Length: 502
Image (cartoon, rainbow, N blue to C red; front, top):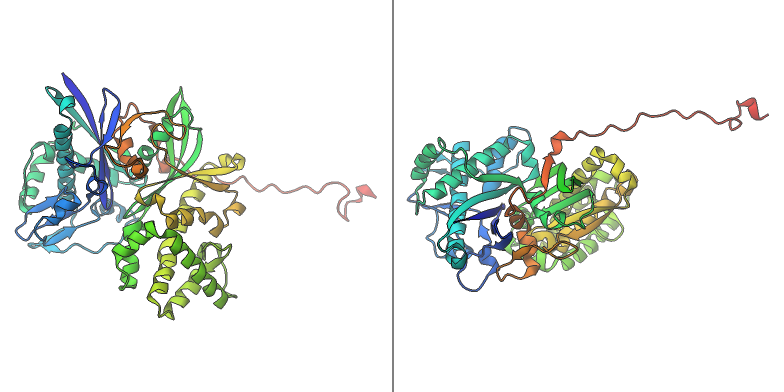
């Protein structure tokens, strides 16, 4: 007999999460990568590769495993975004990164090296996940032939780019590399392996799926899910992915069409890094922790300091696209914040002002881009809707700093005057809760309150034939032009030159 198991891999900017599904029994569970007590930190694999001085590669390790490894010569981070940037940069939508150093006269920034590094990282994750499933589910797999399939999450934005083809190729190579089970490779050996594998990467059961569609699977599979427009922001450690989509049913089958997709490097760790570059005395780890644990205090400090800045600049020219909503029914301009920064000796206040400039201002702009473009593509829906449903997910989805900043975009950009209804913020429901049908999903001992971290991996573990069908991506849906201006014909008897009323 054969058992069909499907891995769902949430290939995050800083952490990778994996769920597995027994497709025959329609049951999914979190892969914790531990053999003893479940540990959230161990279920989050750091998305990075270490290159040792002798060329040995380290990847697919848990946090505790990384601590036991020898010091690496080069650490390659932002793997996913570096891979996407190969194509996005050529299309005028790239990201800025610190260039990777050369290794033994080899430029790590070339497309070939970035592809090979990415494929190797994913191959180690795949092999580690498969090994964990076999070791920890003896009753399920004993005497069974396992038929594996793999889904990897890709941002909606990349589906409108040549980047999606590169991701699909890299995933196929990763699957082949995991099948060959090399215990360890050096950098040069990886390049040799990759050359061979790239000639044999057809018909591999590995698929790229839209992350946002996977993230809301627990909702859209429900009979209670209402057709209409939805927004979702996945707040990760490295990025925020925002997307808008229309959910509908056709012959009782759930379907999704995407209107917008944006990815920005302003997640918790990325924002902390950027603030640290300007305020070196604020450790990025401490700030990242504060963005989750002390969000209310940060928001209070933002409000208090912004009031002072506003009072000092009462006549600052105001423009809606150049303002930040700071929570006291008022706004401050970026110019006034920048001026305050130039004359601010306090380290703590420098941190707060930079959180406004580098964080809130850019989050506002991303949210506005996602929402306004959605309205331009489906204006009729917005005419009849009293609220706009906005789901929040990802590790930072519980941060009040991010929640408030996303929600306050409506005020910051005066969306009520643009015909955009108030935002109705929601958390992605746990399977079987919040009006959704119960699905056989097990957090493997991790608290249910952490589901927001695994919602994408869970949705990716669902085979295509069970998931909502994605019928289109943003470029397939043009902006609807506004109706032509209709001149108003004066009514009889209302104007001085109209003698009909005399």
